[in-house]
Length: 178
Picture 1 (cartoon, rainbow, N blue to C red):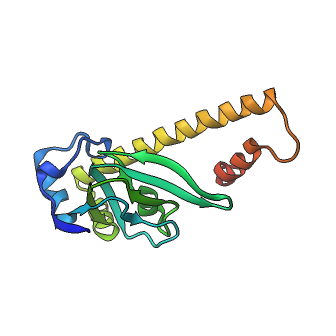
Picture 2: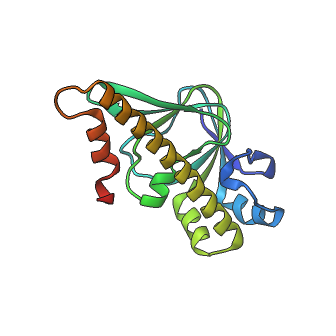
């Protein structure tokens, strides 16, 4: 059963998203956040649903998955400090994955509209959060690059017939970069 409350300073987990923020910065951020308390196996959001909020895990764990032709594919288990819905916040549109709680979980919810308005204000706090978000996404891209390199090595060691997994990933990740 979901419960909502106003966010408090003690709700903010240690997370790279909020690194470097000062006490005055929190006076800007906290009014835009709502604290959610969810039970086990509750959806945070579903793949394909319109994105309306950015979430930060305060406590508990969430399961991230995507639907595939062969069934649900587990992507990650994320805990305190994890940011959810950031791609949809930046790119708009629908969620690219589903997220469910694995046990009792507390989240901070920021509406995309409020969060974007705050970022557009160009306050120093908003600039720090945007820089932190960019750093997080850049780190994920580096990790994806490392996985592509490993796939390339595996493909050279054991070439198969047809379109390789590496070629499929290149098509997904590098379409806009050609």
